[in-house]
Image (cartoon, rainbow, N blue to C red):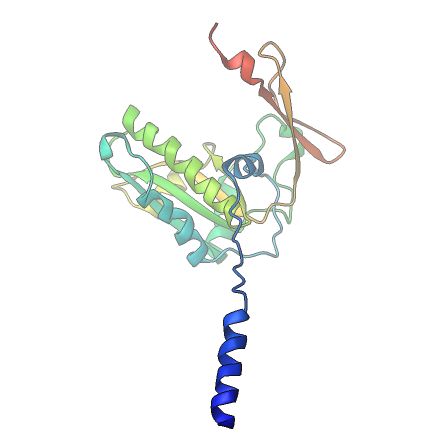
Amino acid sequence: MADNYLGKKFEDLASRKKTVRVRQINPSLDSLLLKNRSCRGWDSSVHITQEQLLKIVSVNTMIASAKNQQVLRFKLLTGEEAVSFNSNIQLGAALPELNLPFKGEEPSAFIIISSSIAENKWVYVDLGISVQSMLLKAVEMGLNGICIGAFNKAEAQKLVGKNMEPLMVLALGKGIEKYQILHVSKEEPLNYYRENGIHYIPKIKTEDLLIQ
């Protein structure tokens, strides 16, 4: 009888317990876009792994592709290979006097994006979609990057092979820069600049983007 009494008590207590569900809050697209600024300074003590780069590249299996051609291929550089490649990029064309990135603030990883066919407008459609998607994934993972068109193509070619056409490089790491977007009219200057350690990025206001 005692066993039966205790059994019922335990069942009663179990039935009263509330199931607590932890709600996972995913970042909104707006928040990811705001954080996705072109980074030119990183915490060099934070090292990016091959596994992290694979997660970033994996978005290419889910995104749109012009004519569904899927011709882009990716070379991942981490560790010493990434350190060596740092001398092959140029950053901050609008701020040449700063010689970015500063010493000790270099990216810790790269993705060289290449095409497996001859360049054409559809390849560049794919390139734009791919780069933006990968950078958004990096931001979601707490990383920061920049797409680089000014790189040593000959050195990149050695790394990707003669059958690939290097198109762009993504530099990645844990960003340390501070940013501020400035909403401006279409007639105002659009060059980014820096003041008091803050990187300012002018962006044309929505109403000025519309064709009346």
